[in-house]
Image (cartoon, rainbow, N blue to C red; front, side, top):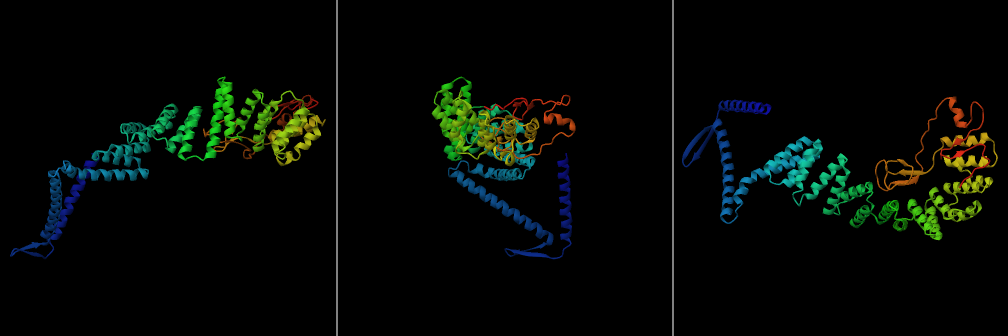
Length: 486
């Protein structure tokens, strides 16, 4: 209704303007005399204007007639589509103009305008592979997911546009959270274009989330062959996938296959701590202590970690504290100044009840890099050395608010994990967990003196020592004569 009213108003304005212009031209004096074949024709100013307009229309019609004659000549010479192309040329011009304007609107973020231009282009052009793509992308921009999915399904019918249709529907399913369907579509898109980088990344991410480790390793291999992944990065990530596959095989009770997969993961990336530990434990089960020692020592030299020490202790589980201290020196001799080495040596000395040596092993670590673990070890040393309860409680109080030290942290979202995993449990990123110290943060302690008995571990009624739970969930009883650290 509004559009009809606008057209009526525009027509009235145009007629009024022409009438007013004609009146002005009639009042203009002068004219022109044209001689043709010995005859003279005198034209007024208004007649001259109409003559010029008629001449322009005549020239335009002449060019059109000439083009039609050319098309007819081609048709007579065997070009059966010449005349049809002549009549369709104007429609194609309008269609391509609408298509171009729609693409510009899409690039400018004008989704509704792009949708209008796409519909206009579809009206004039018989090229659905172009107009459907513009329509689908415009529908996505405007939030019309149903229209976008319907249009992408139309693209599936053409071999040239099938990949675009599968990829478009895949993205729709990902946005809806339907990861099962999205994974099936990603596999289809990967089969159509194995070298498409985005499809490889999406498929790899979904396979990691679904624990399809064998499929993920194949996809990772395709990324390497396509040149989208450096060889060293591929080896590292392939090791992560092999380790995850080994864990799954072990859960199924296939110990021999799990052992082989763990050894392969360690071979691919010797510095991957979980892979080294699993490979070492597989060697321990196979009664191959020499290989287990070599694997753990190599990984410890690259990155000292408490889990490596735990696995190293499992090689000879029934040794005495003195024998264990002697055997462990082969593990830690290459990294004597590393904080993890110093704390490990202190734990071994505490287990051997050599508390002065344990204190020397810690050195200035409790001042230069205090953590909950090092301060708790200092409390155990003081307790073993016979220090007063107030001294032990002092160290434990400091441990309550001290940093936890290195942890498994996602490099992408900085989420802290209790244990290593192939994917981040927060953001879902693959192979982003690193053993490092989280950024320092302020810890707000409860105010009020009512918290003091809890902090110092003292019963307010009886004024007697009580057991204190350390941040590592170990219970240290002030009445215990010594600390026992395995």
